[in-house]
Image (cartoon, rainbow, N blue to C red; front, side):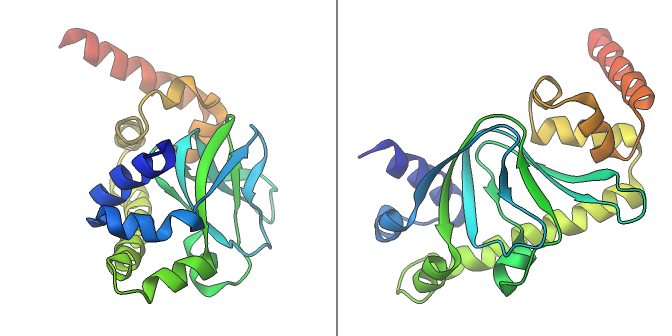
Length: 200
């Protein structure tokens, strides 16, 4: 069994309870991709044609504000997570966002057409499709609720739970943008969190 198959067995088995036979049916459809730091998985105004699993690397999903032209980070995705602009992917309409590698990255990706084929096979892939839709709906809903109900510090703590070591991997101004704060506020939050950890 090769590394690709082992990785897919583990991630897809845990996520959607796909068995080794289900994974084996899909093996030829998954393509290994390497994306250099600063390059894009998908760009604004392009259709997102692939869904990927991140083997290595951190990505940001961002848009450019039409009036200020500032970049606004919406999501981070890192190892073991699925990467896609989901609305563009399922509708096959152009994407509103950029998806950029924050460091050299390695992915396994599958095309929209191949995934649609798998959904029609007598395997567990149809369940996978439902769970992927639920996952990205949850991402979207949770992100909205973070800004409605959580403080910047709570958003920071959630981020580092979901993406361990991201502070050392992504520049501070990108993290500030993701949290919806300025750099001085991020510095204060990091200091408070560190002091609380030291007191435990």
